[in-house]
Structure formats: C-alpha cells, structure tokens
Image (cartoon, rainbow, N blue to C red; front, side):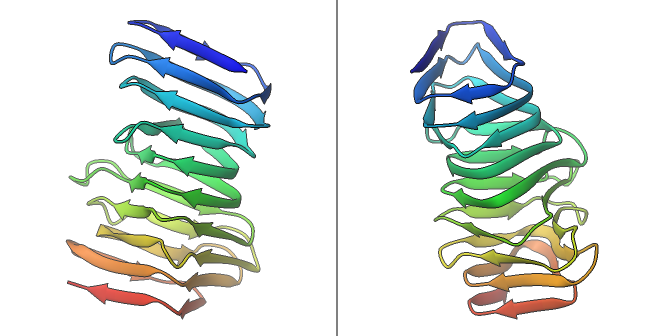
Length: 212
C-alpha cells in the first residue's frame, strides 16, 4: 500500500512507475504535487483532507482517484488522464488554456470545472481517440467563450454518457481536426446566461439539449 500523511507541508512526486492502493492525507496547509509523472495504477488512491492536490503535466493511467467532497484534482499543466475513474472534482481553472487530454474514457463522479466562473481563465478537455465520458457527474463551463470540449484526431467519436451533464455559461463542443463528432446520451444545457455552441461535422443527440 502507498500511504502518506501531510501536516502543513508539501510533497512533490516526480517519478514514474506504479502505485498500489493507498491513502494520501493532506490538511488545509499542505500540497501534494504530481510533477510530470507517468503513473500506472494497479489500485485506487484515496486523497483525503482539505489540502491541495495538483497535477502538473504527465499522465495518470488505469486508476481510481477518490477525493473528499468538495476537493479536486487541480490541473496546472497539460496532462493526460488515461482510463481513470474520478470520484471527485477536476479543476481546469488555474490559468488560461489549462487542458487535459482524455484517453480510454473517463468515469466522472464529480464536477469538472472547465474555465473559471468569471471568464478570466479558460480551459479545455481534449480527445484524440474514440471514447466515452460516463459517470454521474457534470462538466461545468465557466464564463469564457474559449472553454472547449475538443476533438483533435480524425474519425474520433466522443460519447457523453446517459447520467452525465454538460452545462454552464459559455463554451463549445468542437471538432478541430478531421471527421468525427459527439454523441450525447445525457444532458447538455446552456444555463449560465451565455452560450454553448455545438460545432463540428456530426452531433448526434439521444439525450436532452436545452437553453434557459
């Protein structure tokens, strides 16, 4: 097992490899930074306490991350989540153009914040292969029109699961390269006083699309 407890301190993890099931506990005065790691999980990692958990580049693969309610994985540099189950929040608001690449799907049981609420920072979730974003969570666009869910590879289809909600103030679902598209089995709602654009070559809706 991989266990650590932090009190008013900082833990930098800059190596790659494999982690086993374990617990990281960080109080409000502590920070855990994953610095350019390439980690393949063979079990789940429970991240407890009110500390800050940052992913600064690198990749997390084939693992389950669980946070205390209200806490988040803070992405501060371009990073990859590959086959991850996220029981908690994902924060893409640290600075302009914070982005995460998804591979082999994401199970999101929390909120992914794409861009800051006031529009001062924008973020993106990028897809380079066909996959599904599922779970009972939500993707919440902040106030910038530059917030995106973007497909960047040809012949790529991204399916949004039946229990997933994409909503917020401003952003878009876009195809930036080649053919492909989005399939919505959940809910997409422009409900934050702005506009959400559904662009690209193909958008197939089996769920709910609304604007309020």
